[in-house]
Image (cartoon, rainbow, N blue to C red; front, side, top):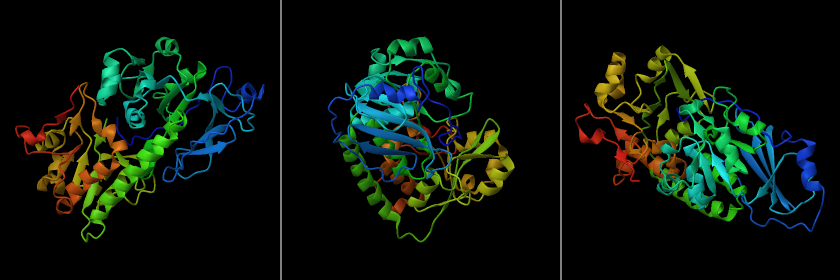
Length: 408
């Protein structure tokens, strides 16, 4: 799937009640034993898609309108109460006891959040688990400790509801969408399972995207771990960014490629666009005001991208310049083609064929930035070896076009 593909929001719910219903709130207001204050807290500083508020005896997690980053419009609310307690809650929302014990993930892209928090043992189910690149989670899937709950493949994959219900999850994490073709979460919500729709890919910055680890942490009372790991990542990212703060030349950069006849461009305020800026580059669609993807026709994309100094493609079938030209002979006219500055994101492939570019980069934005700087300004970071990117050779016969396979 395209990393920055445009998706739309859908409903979430709970058994016998929709989010925010009286049934949700009354469930925790029937009795009121001595409340306890939740001491572990975290501060959200970069992410625009969610908020966490701490009250006496419970937490409030709000998901904000993914289509408008920075918007204060709340699309869903979760009331997180300590397991076994019944605090008096004034707000309306879906009540979940924490720490969550049994989580199901719809996408391998969210696995790294659990790994960095040390809570992969809480994952009991996943869809399309063969795409996972994390060694520990892959091992648990192979051992049957994490069950496959998906039907089909790709973005249209659905939940196998019989398997899902058998796992008795108390938390389901999926990606935000309102496109009915992709909205596998709707049936889960209708069955009364608590579903959270993460819109981390709509964040305008890489650090904002990484900070969604705090969203996950709130459901597992893992805020101290989240604060520590995020602070370390932030420090490293800012240190890498300083390496190109003084560059005079800012090469132009184009992302993406056509998908099913349509070219999707990342918005000029997307995390990919801002990643290019942080790496000392200039994104060719930086005048586009959005954070999500926007479909444009091939001719428009080619007119804008043909003079770009560099091209980073997410087409996993492109292993050489020969394969690029074979798809469309007009690509031979691109400046990046003629200079040999086309890169793929196939640098790390998991045992099941999953591309690690869509997974561990979310928790290693500093290394992703180093990759980008190494491409655009190699002298600024001479010792760095590309991790997720591969410079396409002239033909597939050259070894440098081969991706690195991640060990099982």
